[in-house]
Amino acid sequence: MATIAHLSQRTPTVSIEELLAGFHPSYRFGEVSFETYRPDPSAPSQAEAVTKLKHFASHIGAAKGGFLGKLFGKKKTHKSGIYLDGGFGVGKTHLLASLWHLAPGRKAFGTFVEYTNLVGALSFRQTVEVLSTYSLVCIDEFELDDPGDTVLMSRLMRELSDAGVKIAATSNTLPGALGEGRFAAVDFQREIKVLAEQFDVHRVDGVDFRHRGLPDAPDPLEDSTIEVFAKERYGDKAFAIDEFSELAEHLSKVHPSRYRALIGDTDVLVLHNVETITEQSVALRFVVLADRLYDKDVPIVASGKPFSELFTPEMMAGGYQKKYFRAVSRLTALAREGQAGEPAL
Ligand SMILES: Nc1ncnc2c1ncn2[C@@H]1O[C@H](COP(=O)(O)OP(=O)(O)O)[C@@H](O)[C@H]1O
Ligand SMILES: [Mg+2]
Image (cartoon, rainbow, N blue to C red; front, side, top):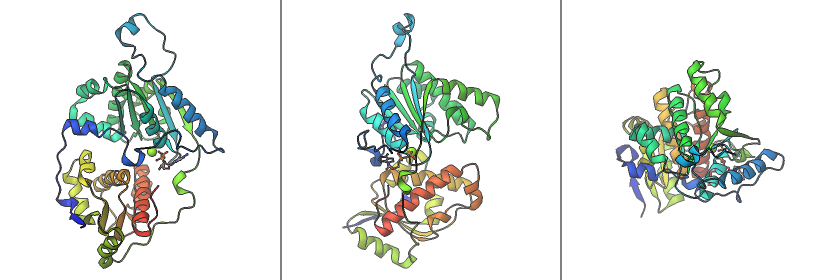
């Protein structure tokens, strides 16, 4: 029997242990490896990334330096961090997750936002204390929308690096250029420069693996048909059925670090009457929900506006455009999966 729930009626709580236990690659990247990464022969930096990351992996967990190491001044021959920069879909997350899977010891894998949420939940000190016991911390999708968060993460990374923790990060811009043109504060740039020096920076070139020859967003379905359509297609699955406006409103009442728990065991999301979001705070929360849905590979069957119109043109051209493009691309892929049966890469 199919089960039916309403995400807009769930208010999950998450303990610190549960929060930390969530710091591993998402379902989508649960089994990836350097072997399943297929470097594009026309972009040599992809094969180079694999070589560099494997080399980096071989130093993880070996000598954490520690007090004696520092006292007798063993010279560091390699950097404590590796940083992959590149466009969307060239496989940065795939590579980062592959590193995580290969690395020995305790290791954490999360997005930049998840780490800032962790600091919010645990406090800075406690986060440093906990993560200092790890051999590897992977930070996916380094973001610089907020100078406060950037300084916070930069401090966190420095303290972890001092504690001998290896750090691997990805982002869409070079650390030295992060935030450029948006925040000119001298302190902010100094933070970033210090950070950049600790990292071996590697640029991954290539085209978006997901967008090779993929069709556009499917036309939204007639509202009265979507539940029947979803049930015919997915039969026995766990459905979440929500009114778009109610779900968007409900997101303001649940902390984004709990959206994974909010989605819970949902297999298929049926979304009635998608509208264009006009408020930035609502839009940003929806971006996080889209990420969590994509992580779990939850197909979507929707009516109303196509996801390409989820955000206003002003939003798509503004400071958060990267997030919005990512959300549209991910939701479109999930809708294509839900409505046309194409797997969402
Ligand atoms: N070279 C590649 N070989 C195999 N799969 C790839 C490759 N590049 C990307 N992918 C797959 O394409 C999807 C998008 O890649 P992802 O790692 O999320 O890109 P990025 O993080 O750079 O935006 C993932 O499912 C990933 O496994
Ligand atoms: Mg990525």
